[in-house]
Image (cartoon, rainbow, N blue to C red; front, side, top):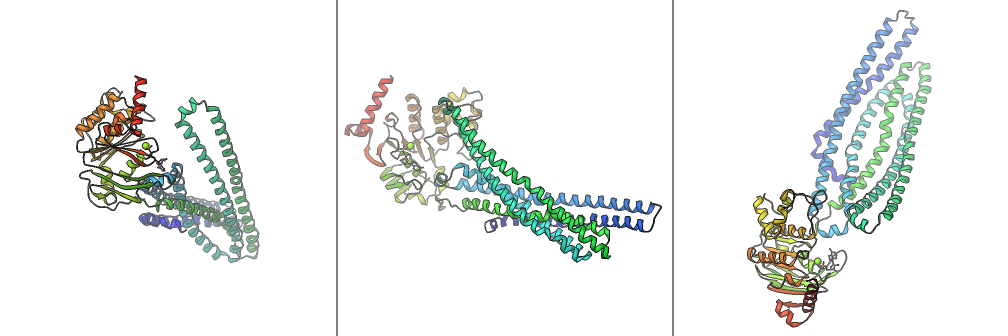
Length: 587
Ligand code: ADP
Ligand code: MG
């Protein structure tokens, strides 16, 4: 129960509901006892009528009618309080489920990229959905049934002992055996259903990948191969389900067998006691009802135990993530970025999970409002520099300063808020264009403002031509944008924040040179005071910047201005010529 201890704060939060629920359980059980007593009285009335030769049936009928009416009334009352019990305890478990999901979701969002690299999305999803459901089973049924069991058991056994101790002991005998066997059956069922769940997850992931990559699947004519792979996984799923169904099918017959056994014992021992005159025949009927009433609660001990074990395992998985601390911590200094000057001093960086050294001994300084271009082949470390400026990772060697302060001493939210980072993959959300552009701004933007920044990014005219212009939905359920359109919308999203630092990570690659020039010109005139980092492998995008660094294998191999670099005839010069030739071929 160590892991489940984490949930105590939620029990505390809903304590009134919980106590009320417990109260309803006890009340409903008290009402449950009465019908058995009236059945006994009815039986005894039969016997009395036979023995006393009551020829006129009036006495008998009146009594039976009276008892039946009472039985119905008490059954209704019991039902009513059972309804209340479920309404409090099960509803409480749903509320806690909601709270836990929110807690996990919030926590996920705080965790750093390293965490997301280490754990796949499927795992994150299953902990927030399946594992939470299992914990919910503990909070609801596995809390309610034991309370029910304990209160019902004490009430019934107390009543039974008052009638006859010997009979009580005998009829209770099979019950522990039942609990233990049910525990093992439940355990097997849970184990098997977990296997079923895991296989189901595998199938879902496979299907999801197929459908999101449907274009590749179709163009590589891989449908047949995929079909047979899917069929294979689905048949494994089928077999696991059949095996589960077999175990499930054993559950009820087994319970019925044990109930039957107890009933037989009751009749046999009860008969002997009745013959001796220790109890009435009505008592036998009463006991049979009690034994039946106890069966399910006793069986539930086994069931509940296995639920608790499962919940424990799930909560462990949940806790594992909840106790994961973000590696990037906010030291909570209040400073906002004022100038946006960036300094890298002997920065080396190795990615934590893969151990790839992406940067070696990088130093540069970008003054406020000036621009730096980073060029280099794929994998040379360009995006890594961008990641470090946003402090998506912390460095161990070297120093990064923004506004003359070590980056770790800046307030993390302010830092990221003051940086407009256009990532290499233009990732937009399945939402309207308006909302996508507004994404990073916390206040509501007027349409005019949105238009203005879309204009600076050179996409305003194209958006106006869409069916619902800025309210057009993009992504899975909406229109599909071209690579260049996506790039410009993500540029607008960064610009509208009016950041102190702008980072363009190869986000002009899908644009024609005319649009590219327009955007670069706009940056120069409209973002004069913004520090600009432009990553590109196209020389055309960067000829006008204040300084250029050329990266190779994580090292700066050249630096200077466009003309200087051309003169020195190294890698930059080579790249320039290659691109020039390419363009000439295209023209
Ligand atoms: P570029 O942007 O110049 O193409 P990157 O900065 O993306 O290069 O990558 C530099 C090196 O770091 C590459 O070897 C790449 O494989 C590695 N790398 C990039 N991102 C990650 C990451 N998130 N985790 C581990 N290694 C990474
Ligand atoms: Mg890159």
